Length: 165
Image (cartoon, rainbow, N blue to C red; front, side, top):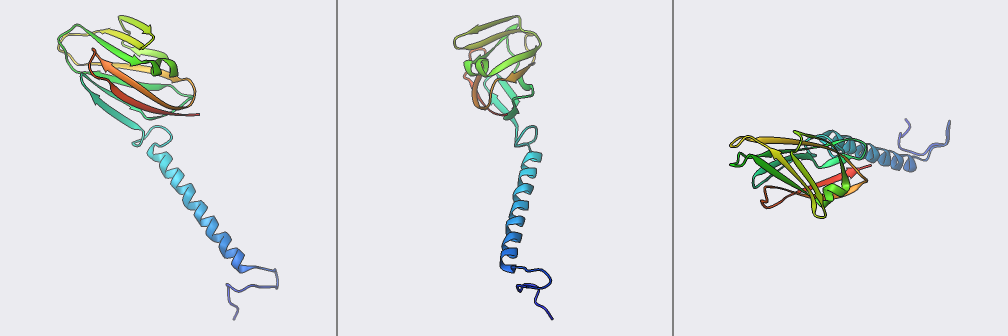
């Protein structure tokens, strides 16, 4: 009876120590590929529970994706708490203005001002009613972006977005 793990010369020359090492490397590669697939399904490279983020700040809640693609539009959803005023002001930092191109804003702002410190958007709202604003924007470039957003002069909420190529 022949040992399956022993080196052979006939009918084909085999070096079993090398073959076992090759099998170990191959299985290690399978584990890495499986881990990448699971991470992708979980949202590490786009939509999914690892990517979905909700930030609650004073006067508003922001929902967005932490991991974005440079080739697709990003959705930033702002939910304002009810207030006494008939207008709500949203300020987005200079980083948002520099790193994203706004494709659409729903509802349309009554006023918008782009300045050195960022972008100010003013929306007409019904007093004492919650308001939602959706901003669709396309990223410029790749890498990490730190955005500050605040409503009506309240302390800012920090949004971190990583943009993949």
